[in-house]
Amino acid sequence: MNETPFEQQPYGDMGFADNPENRCPVVLVLDNSGSMGGAPIKQLNDGLQTFRDELQADSLAAKRVEVAIVTFGPVVVQTDFTTVHNFYAPSLQVAHDTPMGAAIEKAIELLDERKSAYKAAKVGYYRPWIFLITDGAPTDSVTRAAALIREGEASKAFMFFAVGVERANFEALRSISIREPLKLKGLMFRELFQWLSSSLAAKSRSRPAEEETVLLLPPSGWATAG
Image (tube, rainbow, N blue to C red):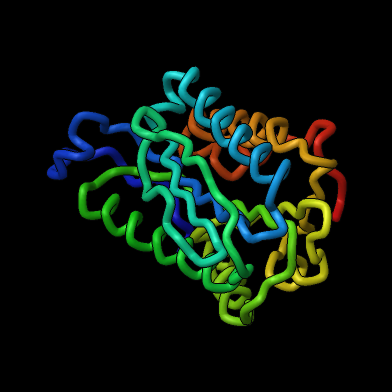
C-alpha cells in the first residue's frame, strides 16, 4: 500500500498531543565497527552533531522530523524515534564486527513499530527514509534484509539509501539497495549530514500531495557514484 500522511484528526496519545504535526521519520543505520576507528568515527560524530543543529535551526523540521539511530558492531538502538527538539547526537564508539543485515532488519522493525504508533494516535506521516552509512562489508547474511528492502520499496513503505565510506564493499551495497549507492569523498561526514538535513527539511515543508516530488537534494561535492 502506498503510504501517505493520514488526514489530521484529534490525538489520543499525549506524546503527540503537544505536537500534532505530520511526522517525517528517518532511521540512520551507522557502521561503528573497528575499521571506523580514529578519524572516521570522530568525523561521523561531528557530522551527527551538525545534523542535529541544522534541523534544530529549522522550526518546522524540528517539529516534524523524527530521528532514530541504529549502530552495528553489534546491533544497538542508540536512539529510538524522537523529534529533533528532543534529539541529542550520541557519541559513538567503535566496536567489533559489521552485522549489516541484522542492523537493517532492526531499522525496519523500528519503523513498523513507529508507524503503528502514528496510526493509533491518528498522526500523519510521510514515507520514511532509511539511511545506511558503512565503510566495510557485512559479516552476516544480508539476504533477508535485501528482500525486506525490495518489498518495502515496492509497497512504498519506505525509501532506502546507502553511502559507502572508503573501503566499503559497493558490490554488497548494490545487492541490497535498489538505488545506486553513493561513495563519500574522504571523510566529508559533515557535508553529508548538512545535505541530509537540508533534504529532510525540504521534505517536511512539503504538502502530502507533493511528497513524491520532494526527494533527496542532489549531492553537492561530498559524494560520487559507488
